Length: 167
Image 1 (cartoon, rainbow, N blue to C red):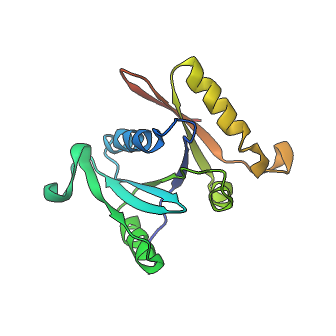
Image 2 (image 1 turned 90 degrees about the horizontal axis):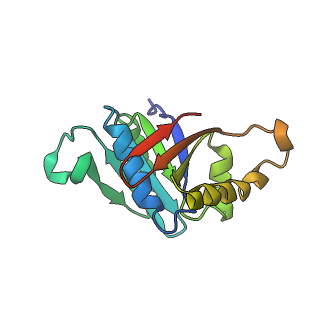
């Protein structure tokens, strides 16, 4: 049968000035430390990357720091589908990173994703950047306040620690 589809959360972090993927990996490591197997998908016009994060990696030779399993990078649509289907049997949650959220393909994926996690730093500039990022995405729901919008969570990063606030 078909692989089960674990919950998918889109990570909103394009406002992090080139640090979005690093912060996404940090968030995935945080979730994996709670004993969950986390899949991270980075999808852009020129990139498709899949990484898995475990609390205790099964195969140390293919793992990096903090349980990060080496990425699967390919542009073959059939292979991409196979990788996602195979990993969906083991992954408890997918995190989706869209480095360019303004392109039509990314916007369609964001509109279809029922859960978003907003990545933010704990300073004034971070809060303002988050506000602007969200404001720039509000036109995804032209139906106004009654339109189905995603559930939103906030993940805060600081110099000394990391916090996740569920919403």
